[in-house]
Image (cartoon, rainbow, N blue to C red; front, side, top):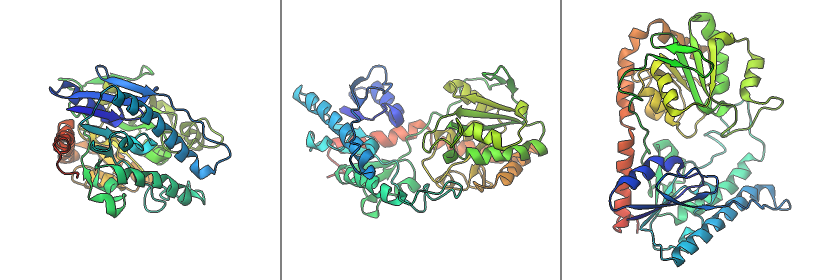
Length: 406
């Protein structure tokens, strides 16, 4: 089987799939990505350069659309050259979010195209109107309609879609949901080492140890989309009620989804200026090597995961697998994973005092949450990468054999 993977930041969400395909006999993997993509050792990656020559005279709503078309044309050129050299994929897997797959069918109309259906925008009822502290601009709804029109083109031309959660699938138009299957790509849930972690040295030199009242919060970047402001506002309450708590915050100072705060270099600096926090008991680590991050989760007693109604982070599942009690926001799609009081605790995203109360209830009586921790580990095991890989490769095999898509 010739598997072609198209992803702007290859491998992106397709890391596990790419590695598994690389090791499977009979599968040859080829990839297309931007010239900034990291790539995967052993997989031939055809890189394209993003032109980004959007016109300053065009309508502002069309700028991102034009960028998507330009990237799609760059990928089109790569595909034409590959076809001229005799390359023919059996299956094409792509992330359509940036327009790269817009013209795939113009080169390979008969080849099954599988799209990663990550998110379909809504101006109401999802992330855009969720946080009253950051209201949407008046024209946000109109802008989203234009962005979604590209996704509609992608939905029309793909043969099968894959969405990680049922809630994410439910965001797509009902007309197309029948072609979208729910398969979470999976995360590696094995412990970082064969022996339980006893201590972790943080970049600052501070050492945290198993058995201490360690509270963790993780996000790729510390920003409101992942509830950083709500968590930071819970810290004064945590410190007042649980003075022994060691709070470890993992993540960068950029933004992944939202915007930087006005007048501040980061959301961390803004929140620290707003709050009275004892920084001797709060440890900002920045971004960490994966093994260090997993080790921190292992020594954590309680992990806080907050998110707007948006895509689900791998960190939630990794925390549930690590033996700590997870407190999650009562938002979609967290509600698909955590059942309050059974395998974790759910809390109002905006109620910082309630977040602190649940954190301290765990720290004060950790033995009372043993069943919840064991149930969380069992839940996380359902998201092990081996299950995600089985789902993906079952789809590859079916469509390559001409079933389930024509």
